[in-house]
Structures are given as structure tokens and as C-alpha cells.
Image (cartoon, rainbow, N blue to C red):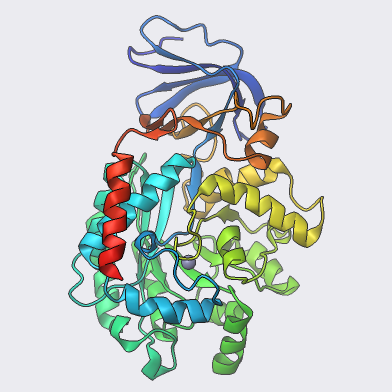
Length: 450
Ligand code: ZN
């Protein structure tokens, strides 16, 4: 094979391809430019003109895809630590009403840096708080993502149902419906890049049934489909939400969402915990996806999503860290482990395998974001988004199955994270930004905000 000068070759690593045959072997991965050009067992036989990385004792996986997050919350961590979702929201809305372009920029850098350090190469964000006079918050997080170097899927979120309309958020943090739709449409025109290898794609994401009017939900779906972008919202997170929905609309959250056009393979819901058997069947039949956020769900005591049942029904399931205000760790690799532990705690030892959970973090996420043809597995022609996990450590050495080592032990050091062929993490250190000065910036910003 002819490999252009400057190609990067990883040799001697255990490779989990996640390809259609789910091949795994000790072998090589060759990257040229922003693409994977070869993957296979044994040596690549290449050395002339290539940068060769010794992957002995390492595990190479596709880069993880984070499907639900609120980046701005990185500077509002550690508040209302023992509260329920609704109590927690009521404590945090007033703090969030003070966010600005500057605080969102710092928060997004912090949260995205942590995602990169924990194996994430593509990150979705759900931003729905736009205080008046706060500046261009979407631009702030898009700038931050470009600086950290991750593939980015921000959403233009929204809230138009304040307390005076029977919603949960204070009226000071909600926007007018027409303004929201105009701003969302303008954001898609300005930022959304549908081209192959895209580093930036937008979606439309009203916040949740209890903070958004039915009209905005319905019109958001129409707008997204007209623009050819995806739809995202929070749904069926807590029993309080189900009770609120039954009382307010006389139906369950999914019945409500479906009545407004919110099912289909272009829709993914965050959490999706409280669905009954018929609803899970409906999600599978319509190809509607779920972003499972195990740590956040446990932190807020919201419940445990039925991931095994959802997958069995054919509903795509990805993983998400959720906002750092309800998951201070913000670590995607830890979500893999927690997804497995919670599924087994709920439904027994056979409910989810270590490979099932790795699949949710990679292929599942890629499917939710509509990028399955480009990311989520290590195959020639796909984008060079990959993670090299070092298992030569006290915590991992000796575990016979490298995937079990990754999923069941403590998070291994990340020797290399490539996004679009570019190193973002090397030797467990961020190469695109200075970690220490970023930590100081985050602390200062949170102090100012509080
Ligand atoms: Zn969320």
C-alpha cells in the first residue's frame, strides 16, 4: 500500500474496530490526513516516511461520542448537591440567568477539555439558557470547541414557558417564541455544515416539556425538518415530570412529544428513563433515540433507563455525561462503566455486556447524531477519530480482555486522542490548551458567577 508522507501508524495495539463484523485483533491502524486508511491484524509493514506509534499493551477504540451535555454548567458545579431534579433546577435557574458570553466560553473549554481527556472525539451540546444581554453564547461555545479541537454538535435550545405560564423556570430566563425560532433558524444558516467530514453541525433543542410550550415544540420540529437538522430535548427524566405531564396535558411525556411530531430517526431524547413497554416498542418502531446519562440520573436519583430493553426494541442508544451541575465529573469513559453497572443493577447480569456498552459510547452515539457513515467505528474511509488507551498500568495489567479492562477498571490513561486526524490529547495531557491555566480560569469564572 502507498502511504503518503506524514501518515500516522499505530502498531501492535489491541484494536476494537466496532466494524460490522465487530472484529478485534492485535494489529495496526493507519491514519492519513483526516481519514483512517487501513486497519488490520499484524503489522502494517509501513515505516518509511510514517510516524510510527508503538501501541503494545494499548487498546485502540473509536473516539467516544457524547450525546447530551450542557457545557455552560462547568462553572456552576457542586450546587444543590442533595436535591431532586425540580429542586435542583429551582436553585440553579437564578445562577444560570447570569451567564454571559465570557462565562460560557470558559465553561465550554473546561467541559470539552474534560471530555477530550476521557476519550470523547465528538461532543453534542444542549444550550437552552439565553439571558437577555448575555451576548452570543452559541458563538462562544463554538469558538471553545474549535480551540479544544473536538468535532462539535451544538444545539440551539430554548425555553418559552416561564412560571407565569405554568412552567418551572423563572420568567427572567425564558424567551419569546418568535424570537427563538428566528434565532434558531439564523444559527443553522450561520453555523451548520452538512459537508463530509464536518466539524460543526447544529440541531434544534427546546429544553423540556415543563419549560417549553407545545407550540414551540411543534414549530421547532417543523423548522428542523425544513432545514434538514436533528431534534433533541429532555424527556421522561423523572416521575415528577410524568406526573406534571399527566396533570397538565392528560398524557405521558412520550404521548405528548409524539403528538407534537417528536418521534422519528431524526429525534433523540436525553434520559428516557420512565417509558413503559408500549412506549419502548414505539421508540424502536420509529427509530427514536435515547441519550443515556447514567451518572446524572444517579446523582439526581431520577431512576435507571431501560437501556437493554430500548436496544432490544431497536431504539438507538448513546451515552451522555449531561451537564456538569448534575455530574461534576463530566467524564465520558466513566459513563461507559456506569451504564453497565446501572443496567445490571436494574435488570441482572445478562442485561448488558462490556461490548454492548462500548457500542453505545461509539456507534450508538454516532447514530443519534446522524454520523454513522463517518464516525463510530475504525474502518478505512471513516474519519480519524480514535482513542489509544494505555493498559500497561497497575490498574489494568493482567486483565485478559482489554475491553473488560477499559470498561470495568478505573479509566486508563489516554496515550493519544485523534480528532479528524489531529492529536488533541497525548500522554494523558491536553495538547491544544494549557490545563492548569484553564483550571484557574474556571474557578475564577464560577466565583464571579456566584
Ligand atoms: Zn440535560
